[in-house]
Length: 378
Image (cartoon, rainbow, N blue to C red; front, side, top):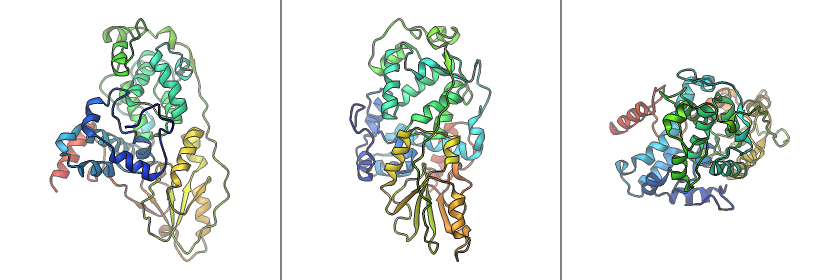
């Protein structure tokens, strides 16, 4: 699979995304995924942006002849993403509050300055933060290390640091990001997650010693905030959207609404419709992302034939149909998503891995068991 050193880490041409799916080795993935140089898929940006689906990836791997029991770990990692989406569907805006209990022992709602400036003193972590700023990607284990350092060593509440990470992630998914931070911080899990230098060294092929994390887990869980993480900072992120004219829609045809979470080039691909990539300032004011992320979204949208980009609000588009023969309720078509429930018109279902698991499940494994049992009944 592709390495972090590749110049073009995340190509945006759909054919290359499909090649990446076809190159998956789920056995190697399960054995090495926790190592930052492991055989991971690098599919997360395309899954998060709705270019492809977890169901599509699952089917592609099973078509190679693997049995589900042989690749259970790989399938579970796909299902985690879907589980978080189900949490968001039910919890809605409460996704951005402590979900199960108040985060234990937090002291403030800021972020350690050393995290933002990559000066923690733990060399591999600092290197990974700098790489993150340039690539828009972090290995999942590094995300956990960062969240543990921020929430459980520096005792920051998870929300502001989660916004910092989401801002820069090409694969930014509000559900996965928020729930994962809360899992580490102990507000969406039964206990906090801690890391130490020995564990970091093991999974990053480093050998640093004598850092503030070079202790036992028992000591780390009770020690005060390390000096390196004491200084905090506030963040004020903004999204710069490219100026665009209001598109002139053919009001004799329906309009498909695409967005930063739905860039599927195969969705209703043969239909005679208007296709609009809608980048709403109101959405990005609430959930800001970097210029690098916006550029990535726009580039991915170019896989969609006939797409028109509009950086504006959906109600501007609906006004064009006010005097048309088509009714608004039948005119706009989108894919169901918690971030865009307010879209008018028809909402297609997403391509779920476990379509019969609607509702809230208190744990991933209760969700997984329900999904598996539903599949086995077919």
